[in-house]
Length: 127
Image (cartoon, rainbow, N blue to C red; front, top):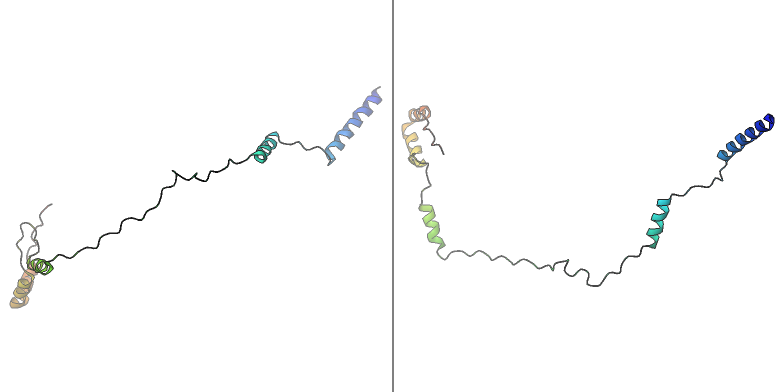
């Protein structure tokens, strides 16, 4: 019996080796993939109504055109008033027209210019 048993074990080993080498083995299908593909193929999109966009899409309207600016009737008087006004000065500093500074430098020559350069700079007012 031992020889029969040995032959049976040997035959089963050969049979198990031959099973793994054959290319005709049945492939196992993935259950989840099969269900997914079946549901995708069976899906039918719901019909779209003709007025499905109503209430979702707003109607486009152009913005109102801007009005052109109008020139004032007395433009000449406003321009002359602007030209006559003096520029604002810093608080605590007296305004010296630029023409006066040039006249002082021109009349004094180099000495006046050097005095102006050596003069202390007035402190700025804190804001």
